[in-house]
Image (cartoon, rainbow, N blue to C red; front, side, top):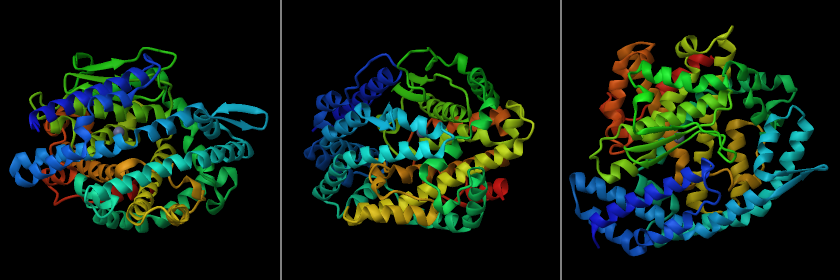
Length: 491
Ligand SMILES: [Zn+2]
């Protein structure tokens, strides 16, 4: 086997996959055909290739070892994805085609969630929720098949469990991450309960009796939308980037796709078609808080990919620790709940209630992902039987409100992506604390902040977030800046 060919093919595979996503989500191509791309590059994801890369990595040292480990991780996770691709297609197909009935009204399954979280009528929300849960009963056998296949393949690849497989290939210290989250969860428990009861008071439902759809509806917070106007989203982003010395209009490699197309995804996304030469930042501004959040988030991914060194190895451009890119995405996104940034960019009479809302949302997500991690560590080490109840119990312990047991497979991403988000949340608060210390509370108006992050962006995903934390002056991941930030803004 030829390692250089594997590298070149992996790059081509990733480029084609992102181009396919771009064409479909931007509304320029109707069907999405990831399966054919997998088929074309199937040789990258065979048992033989995985074993070959593993033994090459074991014999290597230094930079070679780092690169080969990343290749091995990509090849083995690709093997798993390739094995379940029909089930993945089936899941997509059910979700895309299902129509649910609510009273006399019919609506597409996927669209029903939008209707649900935008409705002020609790009974109507509950009716949609119940119908959606029936679709989940139909989806669950497919989802179950996928997860069982993941578990079996991890064992075939020589790992005791799927959890240990992911921990090994992604080099994730799940136990110490869980320990950190346990600290955050116990330290913010009272704060969470108090603020959530306040959030729920307008609809008169106690936290313990609230349903998922109530929480989704309240976090939708339409009342703040008027401050985040559709036509101001892109100018606010450009102004913010200029503040750190980046002129988006002059960046030839970042393509801003703002064209209105009927089938374009309303949610912003970033598709790196060629790193760093051709990065698509796709938006169809709708206005509203969520829209600003997702635009800034995706712009963080785009700038990271766009500033990767051109002669950087394939592995560092495309593979490696996904928490790294998520960190840079969060760094831009969370400017939307930064008091100093808001004062410069968004006109509001009273910033406090918006900030309270913003930090409660963030705290909610941190606790939710902490609970999800705890649950995933169980399902991916003990297997599926009885896990629907474990899911409900674990999530309710941390979040209090109700969680239907049959969400236990749908409310889960592959490959412990939960852990990668959590690492990014932790590291982003550390990185931001350094920027504030070096360049002040208005670091986002200082081009030296841009130079500082550009130096990190240039590495691509060569280093993981633990190594990057060490590079910027910490001994490793440290959850305290994140806890401090929550307590300062919400306490
Ligand atoms: Zn992201």
